[in-house]
Length: 409
Ligand SMILES: [Zn+2]
Image 1 (cartoon, rainbow, N blue to C red):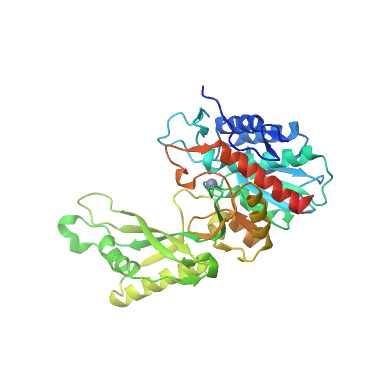
Image 2 (cartoon, helix red, strand yellow):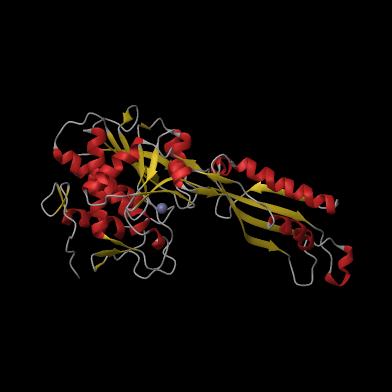
């Protein structure tokens, strides 16, 4: 097996630093080699808790569902709850399925990169923040403010981990979501995502006497042509750029046999919402589209609801996935930029993302100013070639340690 030759050498993480490059790699390998496809996070939860405890960190398990726990790691307080932390790291430890990825659990090292499902999305960021807590602990200076890492489950599906976290009384001055941004950009917010389905009603008849039935696909066309003409709000976010709402009609289902008139048709869509919009407002717009189609065809029967094929958990259907925004002048960015500069990254780029992140729960429910910043190239998320630059993880751990020092020591 090829060796890792560390090119990054920092004060906190490095060859002879508080946490050695070797130790970091060892933790990363163990975490990536442990299966944690969503709904199957139990074993990795145990492992993260074990590693944290081995290094003298406080560990609590927050039950999310049967065999599915958030792991809350705290330094400088007896519990993750009941204190306002100086800084909260947030990372999900579930992954998407392996799909077409070869050797997804091999955690092999090649060209200073570590291969495996979840290495980028987002075990790299999670391990970096865990190593930062270990480094701060080893520094041995009493903390003025506590430091917490919330390792959550189910981000890739129904977001139950972050939902549970947002229902607890966890508090912090600032939070970092450790999803991959290549350490070059900092995400200040993201679009929301509303999965909407329209059911259009028809009536079955044999195709040879089609006029006896009502063709739901034909009815659906009146709605579809209006959906494709819709316009969505644009919000100018100043230095973060422009946020643009979008709609993608992504799935359709209809019909029971080639020689039957279809009695119902389903149009599914992903409506990406900008700050200021909600799932309810997105649904109301679609209802207006149906009302307009009804003016042309008064016999049209169609209903709208929030529904995603992979969602069955009522609370997330009721809550939805909302847009989030942290003000662009948050002092957290200045602290982060200082910490990154010290490790050789002098100019981070501020951005607003079209990808959805669990920062939604931190910003909107827990009211914590939050930025997304982590190691790895997000373009490799969910891909068959997911691998992470180990130096990138080490540098992230260094920056997180420095940030934690500024905010908590
Ligand atoms: Zn992720």
